[in-house]
Length: 132
Image 1 (cartoon, rainbow, N blue to C red):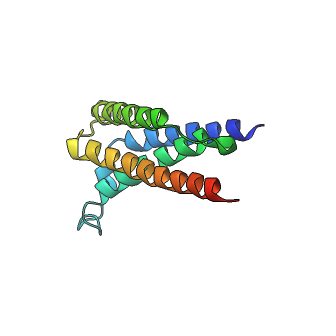
Image 2: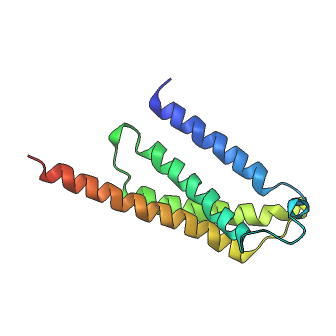
Image 3: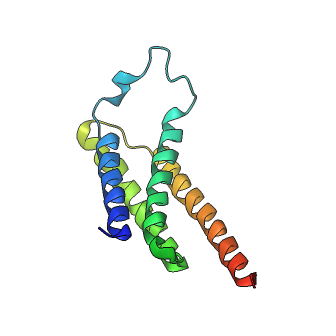
């Protein structure tokens, strides 16, 4: 099994689990009586879930030391936005309520990871170019 196929398998497994988690019916029944202990916990969960999703894509695309191109980053944002929209709208099937704020939190997670990973990649490339 190659490094790329392992990374692909991890991404697909996570993505499948992510779909199941975001489409679990009647999620509010798990909420404590007084509400969630952290304000806006669901928004933080959206940021986190999509941040991990974007991280796994970056991990896959950078296998073998490859640089992740600007075009790939753009497609991750566009694809991530499309999937986040699909994810929110399809939740109505299981009687969950789609929300624009959830969609925006998904985008924040994606963009935060891509911005951070891009900065790290640029610094590494700069450091390797300036090394004797």
